[in-house]
Length: 222
View 1 (cartoon, rainbow, N blue to C red):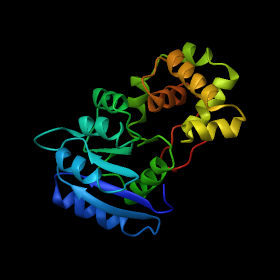
View 2: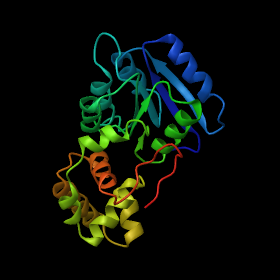
View 3: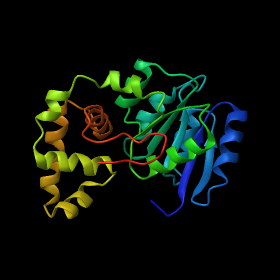
View 4: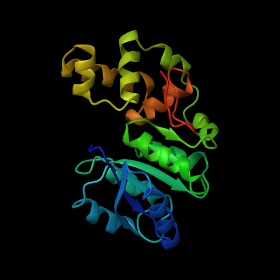
């Protein structure tokens, strides 16, 4: 990722897009590199436009919805971090975005400062959840205390580094082990937590107090 966070917006409401572009134009470390009104156009544009964070609406009118688009964008060849926006959310919606490997969940009417904090947090590799949605997320990943307790000290350390957004090679350097060893640790963490991907593993660990999900303050603690 470059020093400037490149943001691409996907929303089918021109007024919302204009508002987001206006508030994201102020911070010097954020640049809006493009926007699309539907998932199909977003996929085409993002195949040619370098971006770090995709700010996408849950509902996109006709065609694919935000969940399907998120699922596409978090997989090769895109491998982008997605921050989902919604006018309202429920447990199933959050569960769907977790399954799609979203990096953040935010209500559309959030304060501008919170939206900027969310973009920065997601770009840095943290999982950002609007504090008003945290209880719903906790319900969706609850009941995993025994699974978290089964993690070894090394696996917990790897999980904390995963939550900080480090890649496998970066974790290997941090722990002075081989990349293949890190892959084995990550696989073991996902298996023990019964998580489908890293974002879900981080959410489960946060639910059980192993680490904190980023919230209103935009900071994370181990």
